[in-house]
Amino acid sequence: MGRSRCVGMLLAGLALGACSSGVAKLSSKSLCENSGGRYVQGVCQPGVPTKASDMCVGFGGMYMVDEDLCHIKTP
Image (cartoon, rainbow, N blue to C red):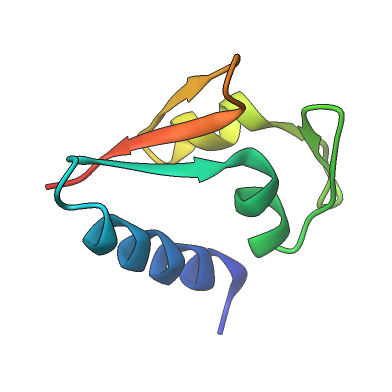
């Protein structure tokens, strides 16, 4: 199973668990590590360094710098 599919499944599970609030909150470190990367000083390093904010936006979320969390709206 590919990394992106694993991350998608993780996000789907978290989204279902967060239905009551309408927002799933994921730490940048968790997003990075669950996609096979290493999170250091706000940058995910899976081979090509990717900013946490860019990864979050890629999942349709809004990155909150002060919380270091990705907020993703749930249906």
